[in-house]
Image 1 (tube, one colour):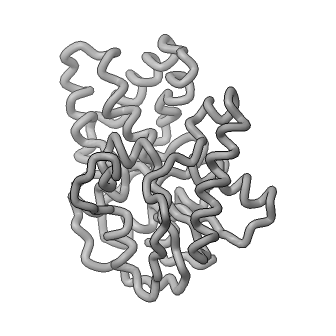
Image 2 (cartoon, rainbow, N blue to C red):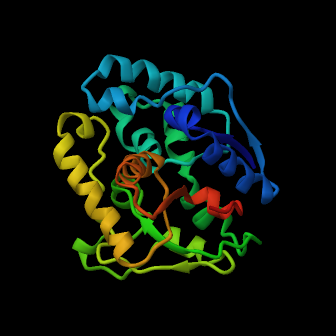
Length: 247
């Protein structure tokens, strides 16, 4: 299979180690991965701010960039959800978009549902708390939603369980929002910070050493709060754990 690696713009600039870990995980599985150099932002920040004209231009650029790949894989649930769920209004029965829409996967979804990994052959001897970001959780169905009272599952935890020596801690609130929400963190900064502090407190209360998740944007928000308060908690994208990195 021919895989196109989509790296979100903010991760490319601020979290290159998580981007490289994503590539490493895929290459460790002997997959054929390419990184299209012409890729850019998916348009999610513009969509959150109501700039539809800018989003349309970026949407067409994204589709033209990735339309020839068998699969498109990205380390960001919110960016994948943007392409799958929010591009349709800009395309009218466009076969290229329909192909991209059905070919794009958040990396945990891809590893769990498509590749069905048995083992990552890495060790991570730490207590880990999993933060389920809203887009991945409720739009991509990476885990069950507590409000629906359905059988519990978590694709992130299922993948982490294949890592040696890890201890996944159980939190009080598995699917509570961290408060980031893109521009929400700017327009409603006090509420956003309070929600983030609640998520951090849940992890610390259960003695987690590491907070992980599938959206670096949410983790970035909480990492800022953790650093400001000098909290004893490390933040890592899930691909960094699956790639065998240590804290």
